[in-house]
Length: 139
Image (cartoon, rainbow, N blue to C red; front, side, top):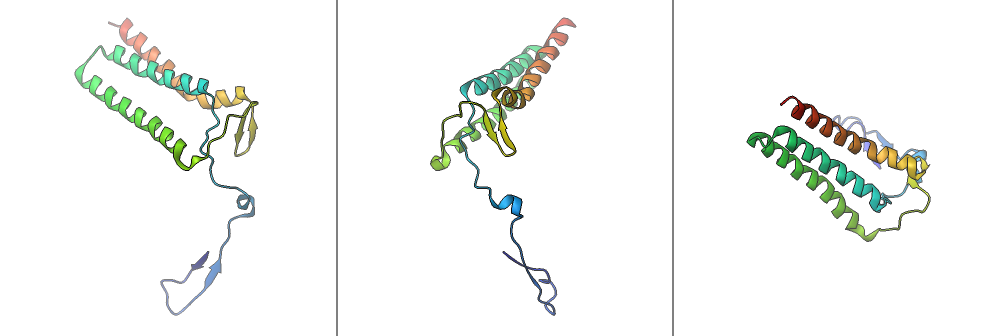
């Protein structure tokens, strides 16, 4: 790729040749297989379902709150739906590896992969349950 560093000054014409850094030159395009077993997806969807149900319980069916929660559920559905659709684009699918996950920085065991992938969804579900318990306990 060529970059004209003096594009705004026609009196000078300096062109610099650029190339990707050597540490990035060997990388290929993204694989859309995600290599995640169904168990991870099941736990993730369940965690978000628990969160939304806990929020509905905590708000006790207040009209405005229910409206906001339903909109948030729609955004969550679009988020996961987009990932599902993009997974099928390009026809690059591969079976999950039997002993862990390939990442940009190396291989992870299943336990490490589960911990990294599921920490946030599980903490969101825990927050929702705790919020609902506190709210419902206070009347």
